[in-house]
Length: 158
Image (cartoon, rainbow, N blue to C red; front, side, top):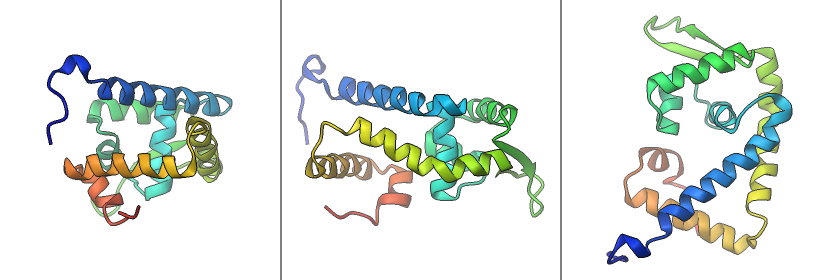
């Protein structure tokens, strides 16, 4: 469906981008006491929430290239939150594993993330939030986003 006749009057991209930046700023503030950034939070949260344990899978979730992911994992290893090791089944594959410090934080991440999302969505009613999630999911599913199809596609309630 064609909604715009010229880009000059299209604010959707700006609004989505500004909202994503606000989300990251809020997460940064919640993660600062733990010495992590919003980007590092996302990596750890993907591991916790979806059981992802390879750099390739994390990169797929975040739509980041392997070089960016390598630097991210280097920082998380330097901060002693995770380690990378070769798979015992396939030595070509690298697996991610939480350190003890990482496990302790990983246990708290869902709560920290919920606090941050509550702060982000504070201006919305419960119905508005559900509608916003529904609409964003609808856009991603229509575009064939593989992560949304794989992880959220079956959860298509309204």
